[in-house]
Length: 271
Ligand SMILES: Nc1nc(=O)c2c([nH]1)NC[C@@H]1CN(c3ccc(C(=O)N[C@@H](CCC(=O)O)C(=O)O)cc3)CN21
Ligand SMILES: CC(C)C(=O)C(=O)O
Ligand SMILES: [Mg+2]
Image 1 (cartoon, protein in one colour):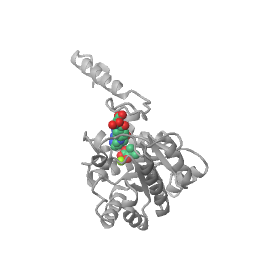
Image 2 (image 1 turned 180 degrees about the horizontal axis):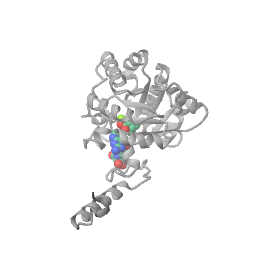
Image 3 (image 1 turned 30 degrees about the vertical axis):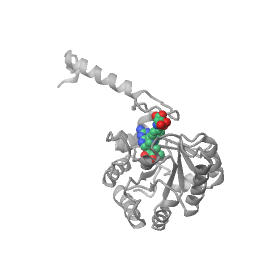
Image 4 (image 1 turned 60 degrees about the horizontal axis):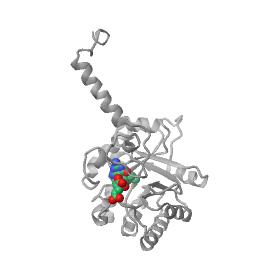
């Protein structure tokens, strides 16, 4: 890496400053080199190698089956495509919940083998010791509260979280705890907009929302959802910027037609 790098890299400190300057933070997922390159070139601030790879890459029903080895592989692919964005990698289900030592081992592997710049883990007070252990090793941690998909079998549904006062209060105190522990940012997933706004105003670290309204310090979406590759995922919080499902199936059927009719390859496309 050149010392005289032309590109200004985004760091956890950059995100902190963005909140201070009231500049809204953007994050998208990526799981592979080619996509990461495009997302980075589009000017995104942070790229998340989400455990949503279990869904959009592997076709699983939930995020639970993806392994640490698989997440490391996706992270390695993304890292090769990124020049500017901050790289955040999800620690998958089972790689940090059992004890702080295991959590640190998983985080270290994600940094050392994966090449991530930071890791994200789901939960608050329950995983406090693990968060401290990881941060003490010099690894930046992004928190994740609200709808935490690794706990889906406990929740039972993907409905909005923290609508009731009790859960909202726990979320607020977890958010303050994550700030105190030294997390550099925090994802808020599928919670009422007014709660997300109150949380964002109550802590100094940036909040990045998904289905958490405009009061957050940043917004994140799953790449495949926002480019319209996912036909069967239409939550209210999603904005689709392309209809790639239609575009790509159309392109495939044109290729099929051109080949079957003998139109492709033509003379110019042959040697
Ligand atoms: N493709 C994809 N996009 C995501 O945003 C995403 C994943 N996968 N996988 C991991 C988590 C799971 N997430 C989810 C999952 C479901 C809903 C959701 O709103 N589902 C239903 C409503 C469920 C209900 O009300 O019971 C919907 O409206 O589609 C939202 C976020 C967000 N993450
Ligand atoms: C939805 C985002 C925040 C996530 O955790 C993921 O993509 O796995
Ligand atoms: Mg995730």
